[in-house]
Image (cartoon, rainbow over all chains, first blue to last red; front, side, top):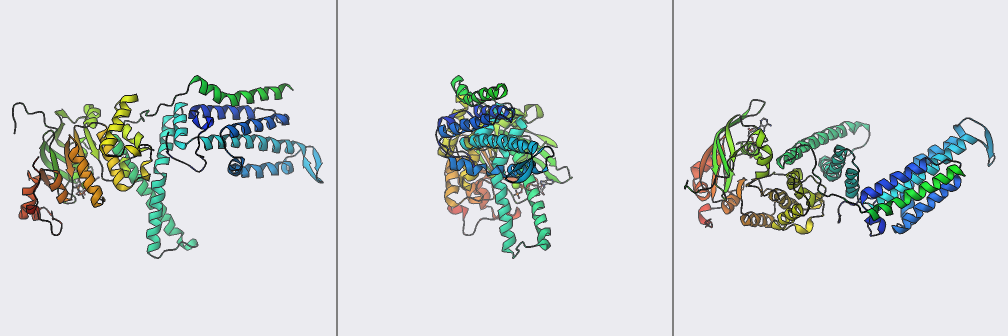
Amino acid sequence: MGAGHAHKLYRHGHSPVHDLPPHCKLAAVLGFVVVVVSTPREAVWAFALYGVLLAGVAAVARIPAGFLLKRLVIEVPFVAFALLMPFVVPGEQTELLGVSVSVPGLWGAWNVLAKGTLGVAASVLLASTTELRSLLLGLQRLRLPPLLVQIASFMIRYGDVITDELRRMSVARRSRGFEAGGVRHWGVLAKTAGALFIRSYERGERVHLAMVSRGYTGTMPVIDEVTASRTQWAHAAALPVLALAVCLLGWTV
Amino acid sequence: MNLPTAPVPSLEVSGLAYAYPDGHQALFGVDLTVARGERVALLGPNGAGKTTLVLHLNGILDAGAGSVRVAGLPVEKRNLAEIRRRVGIVFQDPDDQLFMPTVREDVAFGPATAGLRGPELEERVVTALRRVGMEEYAARPPHHLSFGQRRRVAVATVLAMEPEILVLDEPSSNLDPASRRELADILRSLDVTVLMVTHDLPYALELCPRAVILSDGVIAADDRTQDLLCDDELMRGHRLELPFGFDPRSVSVPRP
Ligand SMILES: Nc1ncnc2c1ncn2[C@@H]1O[C@H](COP(=O)(O)OP(=O)(O)OP(=O)(O)O)[C@@H](O)[C@H]1O
Ligand SMILES: [Mg+2]
């Protein structure tokens, strides 16, 4: 898809994973997450195997571990939540490093941490090997409601335009001697937000006019038909299928 | 003018009147005919109704009275899809016009809406981008281009629809002199009918052999551009002013 939109998660490169069609990757990640979530939490070894699978994908995609780990920090709120569980969940108590914690709480924390981490890691892998624009095409291909895809496309296109507008307004404010500081100035900032809304709204109207002028009647034409060959699907399926095997073992063992 | 073999004019506006919903009447019976292949400048002071007229040409605004025909086809609700394919409007702000994530997709939008797909669509996109000299930028997002480049892509988005008539609202505004000249070269190289709304009188003289003055919602004059610009009384009467030091008499305009 050429040098389209690069977002902060995306890591430019060429690898078998980068080259897979976006909808295959989306489906694979979704399948993987579903499998992980439905694994019994007692099968600790299964989660270790999932981790190994993801590490394998990262290796094929040539994503360095450091890059991946840094992006896992999105997960921090979950971790905090998980760490609380052993202390607040009622139930049988046990001693851990001299502190009394609840057993169901410990299992709950493990459950959230393991599944959360794996899910986030899989998504980060997806995001670092797929451009935002292709992700949208993939979603469109997977029959996500077209309106949602349209809204997301416009967010990409006009995100920068609107931040730019905001920046210009801020420059204009500061050129006239205004420095935001403290509650006294919140009124001014609120008015800025209002003006930004009106500007964006009016821009929306003008954009709509331009779209209608080029024949828009409510549906976006499909310009880039993303297609996947049987082999590409098979490659993408490797991850969720292996994970499913692990999961089934986890239930039977 | 009306030879028996003359093709249908690209644009025929007759008796067009329009009042905005708030009651403000902007057009009072506009008559304008533009022959196929002609380049006409639409001049007039701020608030004269130029943009209002343009919005009638592809049926965005509905005529209060009178009619508009594009290549013989009346602008009516049931013809709108075809009309919008035939009339390519380039709006003043390219950021309003370029709404897709990449230049390529933006140029493809119009023809794809009209039902084109596959290699045929690709061909249209490439041709349109080549005509404005922007084919290397196909994969770039529009907001990472300079203003002049965005204006050129905006022209390409419309060219890709192979319109009968190209309508440009203030095409030279905000362009540096080189971009302004490059755009003129592009417009001159095109083989389409052009209606160009502009306040840039030298630009009108350079590009359009014929000009009309819209003033207070009516066509006040319709003549060779050079003759109009040389008529001091007419110009003053409609708040049109030439830039300092510019003498339209001293310019020799290329005859079409
Ligand atoms: N949405 C609207 N509602 C009511 N009146 C409007 C609206 N848009 C324009 N007008 C009025 O209609 C008249 C013609 O406006 P129009 O935008 O067509 O002028 P213009 O010739 O394009 O001017 P400019 O050179 O400034 O672009 C003006 O008096 C304007 O105030
Ligand atoms: Mg206007």
